[in-house]
Length: 106
Image (cartoon, rainbow, N blue to C red; front, side, top):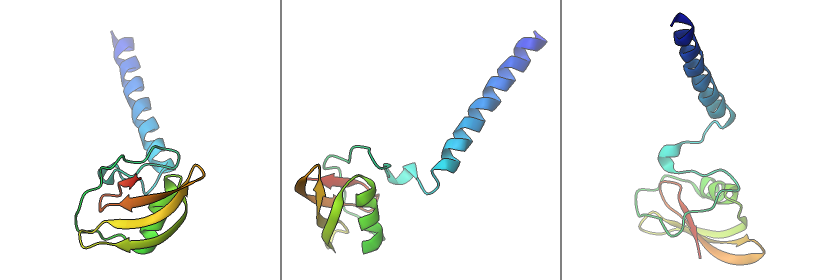
């Protein structure tokens, strides 16, 4: 019984260590703002209006982190959504970024 308890404790502690290591490897990733690392698919039209505190540089960085390149003509509309142009998979697309960090393209 004692051995079983010890094995369960080790298993729980090792899971916590793995979770901590993954967070340390990705500082700045905050799931509360739905930021997706490079290579993840972008949001599909799920941008929402709101008080956007991203600077133009931060908006560009977030869009580029999702695999877009040549991000240009960024402007923030009166609903707090950044709009611009970019390249993705060899084609020109319009991109949008909302206050939560969600990116959509069309």
